[in-house]
Length: 275
Image (tube, rainbow, N blue to C red; front, side, top):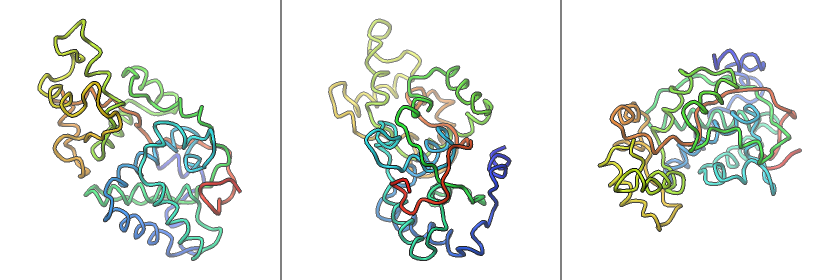
């Protein structure tokens, strides 16, 4: 389905084969270089791609700087990897000025991040165009940490996506971390129903571990692995944890790379500003 959507935008595999042959290689080498010094950029770029696509389509609007843009919101401001996209864009502008879109750089970087964390590779259709609108208020459309399962299913349905799409893309949480502030309320806000104050649907031993890592009065920005056991490897462990009851705390913020047509310009020469 995703392939059909992007093909419908006029994208295709090898879009830059004539206009900028080294495009994909430049992105790949840039991501790899940054990953070697900071592996946290891999989950950051993967989530960034989703956050971009779910709001206005895959138009790189998440990258635009400003006082009230998508980038300024809590779910987006904490993401790692913005510097990776800027670095790749600088190199691509030097090699092929005005050719490769920021939206395609982000899509390629997300794929390369999965590969670097031992996940499977895939061919990325390219040819996206960059957006010229970025509003913080639009980020409210993202699935929220506090959404019920039904609410998340509805948000996906609103994008033409199925329950299977949601479950599949939740698997993106197999790499990376979450800040304590996003799930701490589930560890301490249920004192009327449980002795330890935690959501009763959570595994008791897991609660003890999380409460030690995220005290009620502790640093809310502290990062905790989303996938207990293999947080730096793109594998199926996340789903194993789901079945074992080690998942409720991580009904976090991103589930799909849904693609819709938003307002586009041709190519942004600098990803952080509108031409």
